[in-house]
Amino acid sequence: MIASLFDRLFAPAPAPLNSDDARLALSALLVRLARSDGDYAAAEITAIDHALAVRYDLSSDDAASLRQKAETFEAQAPDTVRFTRAIKDAVPLEDRLQVIEAAWSVVLADGERAHEEDALMRMVASLLGVNDRDSNMARLRAQSI
Image 1 (cartoon, rainbow, N blue to C red):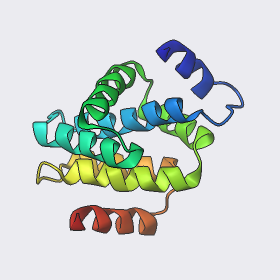
Image 2 (image 1 turned 45 degrees about the vertical axis):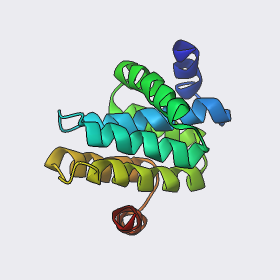
Image 3 (image 1 turned 30 degrees about the vertical axis):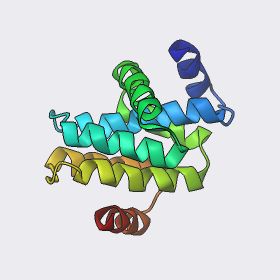
Image 4 (image 1 turned 90 degrees about the vertical axis):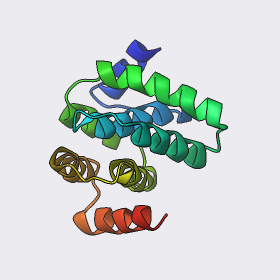
């Protein structure tokens, strides 16, 4: 399953991903952001599970299961630039904007904004085609939750 998703993501002209594959790829991006500072904290895991449950209308068990699959997928994904560009090519902009907001909620979950997380958020937003203004607005929305 993971190998075939990588094949679809990194095809020369990727077709839009089906909803299950897009869900897994975007979830893996949240995991990558949470792991970026070298401290994959329980608060970040909880934030990922919450974001997945809300975004995809999942039970807490189903959200945790999706996150666990995403952890495996993320660990095997190539560098962030290629991975994020592949997601951009295969996922509609509206979904990418929602992912940026979820990503900010994960980055902010442990109460610290590590330099590594901030740098990765700037890069990921840009690579997903989300401008700084929209990313900042997503951060403000995530902070208010």
